[in-house]
Amino acid sequence: MSNTAKADIWLVLVTILAAISWIFSKEAILLMPPLLFICSRFFLAGLLLLIVGFNQLVELSWNQCRQAIGVGCVFAIGMCFWVMGLHSGVSLSVASFITSSAVIFSPIIAKFIFDEKVPATTWYAIPFALTGLAFLSLSGEFKVQTGQLLFVMSALFVALFFVLNSRAANHREIVNLKDVVRISEKVPTLPLTAISLTTVGVLVGALSFFVETWPTVTDSFSANLLGWVLASAFIGTALRFFMQTHAQSLSNKSHGVVIMIVEPIWTALLAAVWFTERLSEKDLIGCVLVFISVLILRWSLIRGLFRRNAP
Image (cartoon, rainbow, N blue to C red; front, top):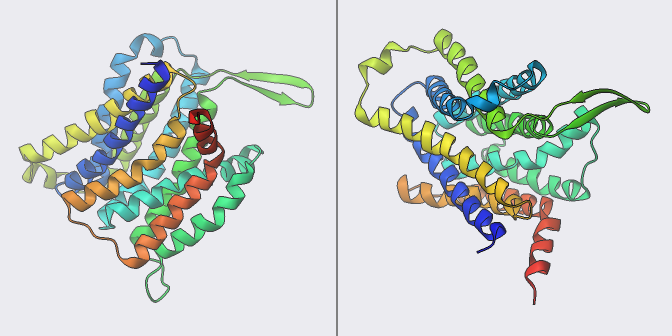
């Protein structure tokens, strides 16, 4: 089996783990304060990756550390909106499709902040994405539903996280006219992930300390609660990121970007089995429209995939 095929198999497993982590998270926040859960999940996952990547960590420059911390700060805001949306009781199926719209917002944010070129497919995808989000976020009286709005806000910050994370992970020359002003050093994947996840844990933990009641956790502590938190931290976060990094290291010809778009479909299927969730007609239309928008955005890659596999 080629490395490319192995990478694709690993990434399929990553999408399944990502979907399963929604179940872990939903179960955990039923038993503990949501912000404290995010703090525990990301701090434990980040701590594990810091230990694994310690040799790379000590070799980082201050500029590299600063970039990784900045990525973590943005991710922390996105995760606060995300977990509060989950805590509000929004269907996992709806939530996962709204969150997947972050890939649509990413190139637009990159354009406005860093003047990066926007792929033509993004402009074709936007009408489908916005219409789908409207179906998912508006009630029958055309009022915005709070839980869905929280996930839309989360998607915007996750999109910004994607942009900053990609820029931190790649070597860039910062230029002014024709002169190179400075070099932005790339941050190796493992320490970048470790620092950003730990940053999320620390920042959200500080927020949780001031706005949530921690003694309620000790009063309701159980083996189930501990199990869901550890599963979220080590399986749904640390293992997932490690597997994704491993898959990306096997081949640069993997179809990973295409494969990753099936995560909300796995989530919807698992939510239907685990929580017996059922989508309303309006929500189903919204999910389909958002999924179509993501397919449009990735159309050039999907078309290339079929062409390579054609006899």
